[in-house]
Length: 560
Image (cartoon, rainbow, N blue to C red; front, side):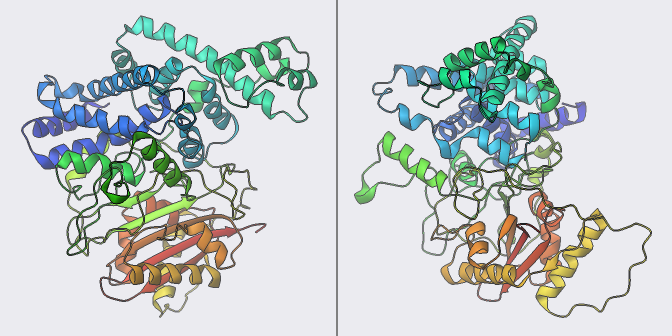
């Protein structure tokens, strides 16, 4: 962390220690993505990730007064996160019924590896490395969660050592051992992906249940070392630290923002844009006469308190229902962005769902500390968001139009030549309709970024207009409607056979210029608008009470 960022963070921590609620909200909001990535990767597949993240941040807030060196906040917070991870492991091993609930602990809908691959659009050896992390023991996964962030530039080695409560020398030894296990796991991934599969390996895998484990990692890696056919899989492995360098953080789901920030504030979640290197949380205002929904879980029917198992099942079902992936700051595709607002500020939301196999350049996102100062800046004024009629969701890998639950590789969209800088643009008549004006403004921004213009598509127009009208009619503001239909389903229903899609929504801006300015000032929405993989666009606008309601749908057709 730079000296300037350290000073900014220390000033924010000092203000939070003095009881400033805005500073406390900004501090928690700025570091939630970092904690989510530490815990999520360490507890990959556990439905308790959100609970551990929430407990970490609330414990940090409660103990903030005892932090003597505000400039050490980040390392102190990461150490708390790792303590909570270790406590979770211990509790799960000691808890009665842990064996019976083992099936619930591995949640395919919340798999952090899949989220990482889809959100960051990892391909090649980067994707291979992410998949290999499933084969590590819990202790090594915990270490990996810190080392991954060290390689990505989010943590320093001294912070990793502090979190592990080890000396830097001992930490280096642990890291080397973990890297050896990770390398073996990468070979395991290669061996299982090879087609046709080695006959000897197929025979060895006879009793395997299909779940990654340390035992089977050792067996498959041992086979790959001694097999004349598989031994070549060990060659060509790029150093993992180079593959992970500069990767962005995985975006936390909107439900987690509400769950963490609402209890931290003591009432409803605070408003404000919190672009902490990954994503910002949604801000929603209750309708008149309606209470603010409690953060976390719904009450059981009849007022009964749901059991821990019921809560896990509901959270798992809710996660699996979400097909759209989210856009990460600085990374095209993969993450769900919500633009939180102050009272009187128009909300916007953006999502994109590229296929996991799509090739893209991975760009670094700003660190969490960099966003801490900007989190206190009030955004421009317009209308507040209304509560969504659908429950909050956790991001999951995108689905294909056919409804497959796992991401599949797709042909990357054909590249379009960027407009020549020396070309003299021909004069075009000014667009008159609202939709045409939005499309023209989008293409103006894309031209400045070197992307080809988008073509207005009647099917995407239909999908966008339908969603704007539906949001106004049923009083929700979300990418997924109360029936569970996400942008991919709506786009498919309109007849558009997409290979990739994206969506931006907004409410309250009165002109095309105003809504475009809001979208371009939000990293997630801007990423959709400037995604050179998109080829077509549709725009829907509905004027009504509390509006206008705006929707942009982006896409590229299959085989296009």
